[in-house]
Image (cartoon, rainbow, N blue to C red; front, side, top):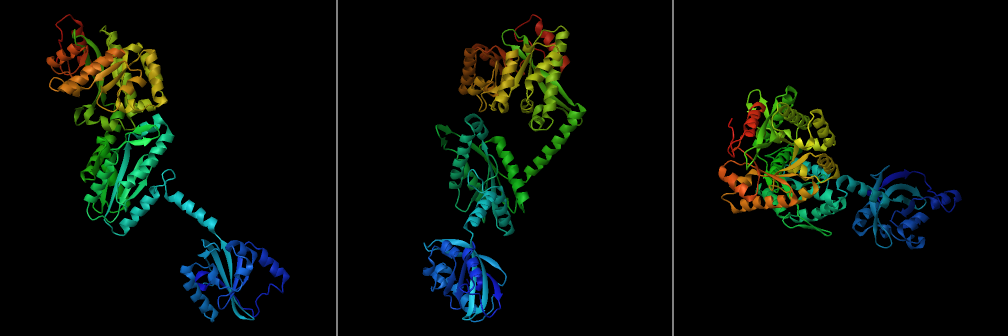
Length: 582
């Protein structure tokens, strides 16, 4: 009720309002929703209305004649009393015309926020001060809720992207040595899709507890998006502090998460950067950490700190994307074909269509030079559709030449599956080139196989029902394994070349090959062994029960005309394993 804590409206009249003498004014004062409290120059309460009784919890008789300290928190009384004394002695008020928010005290001892506007006048008994008071507890709570919604993630209660960015900018503006970590979850989408969003939400809430517990108390851990998190480390003494934090975060994923009846093993990829060396402002620092995260994601379950050459790699990747866009328009892609051979007779049973790029300056490029970028390129769907059409056209052309009908294996891009019309596109392409469904075999990569959603599985079921073959490429090397065979209508397993290469000198690799062959036999699946390069490997595979191989022992991938000659040669009676070199 003092001048440092409220707006001041000075009433110059000699005689202040007497509520007892003015029935109309008294009725107004008693029935307004705001509390009215009047004190004299000494700080003694001389009048309160009904709303004051309600707001403060006192009866009127318990307030009248008592000092204003009755409704002022202990820690604020000194300042209030000093202001009252100054105004009561005729001093000026600094809050003329202002309304402020201060804390008040209820009878039960609880504090609450009020909005106060102060008026001062001179009456018959000297200086008097009156306060118009509003309880703003609900408004303050609403403001706090809005502030929390604006600054915190609603699911986990963690700081959100806005709060993280704001604190990062504050740290950089203060010139503090600052480190950040960006974290992506490995495998979260699989759990979310297969176990449901409720389980996924609970997993994120568990992470909101585990991640901060792995770090020092001054670290700020925020949720930026679905499965994206960030860590802010302010005032670090050494960049190694950021490395240690990243390592600690990775170790926190060693223990599985117990979510209901499920025991979930989750991984993470982390990218880090340190200011000012890796970026002087928020945008630069986050971009640097994001580049490091990209490198970490390529390996999975690891962390990488930013290095300057990462920017060069990104620039090269961006340039390659531009070149690929031109290559699509200029029709610079061609297909070569690698034979799949019967180990017993040496006869060519099938061909795998493999993409090549006739680069105008670098010559003929193999997929290792560009496929990783093409798979995420906006033109992936266009190229994938062209590969399917061209492979089917070539297969039909060989048949028209009177060559032995063989199966054509075509690799799919994830973009073709996500387009939503895969089955229709494949069946229409086969019909256009007058090929039977069994003439085509689609190869599925792990990226596609790990997507268990019905929209992904349905097209493959339709194609399998029509008679199109479905092969799982590089079986045994990644996360997708037995569950993939169960969900997809597979007809072929392709044993990865890494197992074939070392099977003669590594017992574990030999055991894996033997196990895959045994499982495939029990499930009625064909098997193609990739990377066969020696007769000894061929003999060992044949002894284990494998009947089809693919690799340099038989031929590298060939242009169409050369492959046609190989196909003619294989159809002639001859010694087992005969092959043509190009």
